[in-house]
Length: 387
Image 1 (spheres, helix red, strand yellow):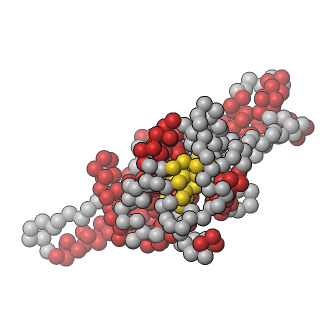
Image 2 (cartoon, one colour):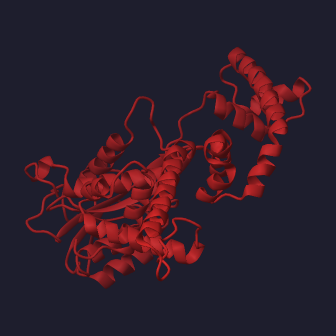
Image 3 (cartoon, helix red, strand yellow):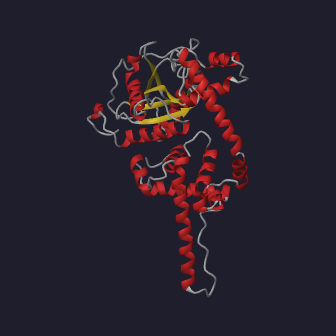
């Protein structure tokens, strides 16, 4: 694309910052954008961050006073470069600590583990931490150790109760502990069970993404399971899928796919399934197509989002012709269904990996995969070319 939306630029910069060891060239090649273009986006983001937060680092090199010898100026610049390299080294080492549940606690742990090498003052400045907050956290170390010992003892009791009856979940185990005389909250039991990987038997919850709206008139099926197109910007398919996240949470992804090139021309991620989700995805397609979707057919299922009055109004304003398959037939929208299945299969890789650790991680994984899919991944339906 010659013109990138603001959301794409922000996600590209966020993807670069989420990978401390990656270079601008690697991220740019992965997203299919010019390296210097990505570099400019990062520079603009750095300037915006400096204007709002005014961080103490990195510090620009100061101009040498009039008449100062060149040797002293070089000495000062070398000292500044050494300081920046030291800060970069600190940030690289700290990256391993930032994947925890509480980021502030993880940073405090990093300062405690490395203050002998770098000093607490410098570490707090680089990581943008309050030194008073760090020392207050360290002063509570004894209370945390006592809490950890109590949690370990309670986890042992929980494991014993669960071993006797593996169908027991947090509510039953809480009741059993209270019967034994423990004054305990069910949230603490849930937390300890989650940490120890203890789980009662339960039915797998089915995530429903297609919820019909009976009060609206559906559109006819204009594709008839023919998922091909003779020219770009003529026939599209769209659907919604869920993205599982730790903590029994979900994000939702809506896509707009061109059947001619199989390119994902519009997509949106949110923590809800309201009509705005599919409207944002269609708006992204409009921008990608230079503001023109007039006459294009958009084929979907009968979800309430696609039959909503807001979405119908948006399609009418853009000149988009709506199309829908039969109710309850996933084969009538097989192209979109297959795309979502491929996305989750290839992003959730690894044994036992069934969900992302955080919403940010899920968004970055999907953003990176879709851009690679559009620019580099070969697709069998179009002669093994990239969309």
